[in-house]
Image (cartoon, rainbow, N blue to C red; front, side, top):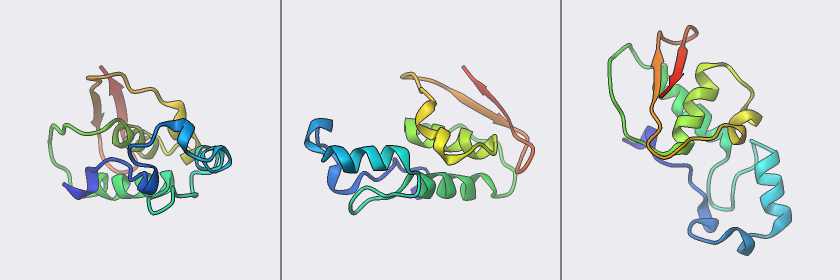
Length: 109
């Protein structure tokens, strides 16, 4: 499902962090509207996942990436996009969202 794909790191995909120019990495981490070269920004991911969450109500279980879980939580809580990198997602974490657009409750398991 395209809406729930991982954050696109563009030209940085697969590189170790020390191979990314420090100034570029700092800006990408600090500015949620700044995309990785050839990739997408955090704001793009939050908007993409938010659009998926705005679809008509349904009950689903989805296995996806930590970035998508972060984006879903940021959107569901109407948090600032800057909070994206402040959410730790443990391996195997489960995010349960109940409610619907504008009235989400969230539970991490």
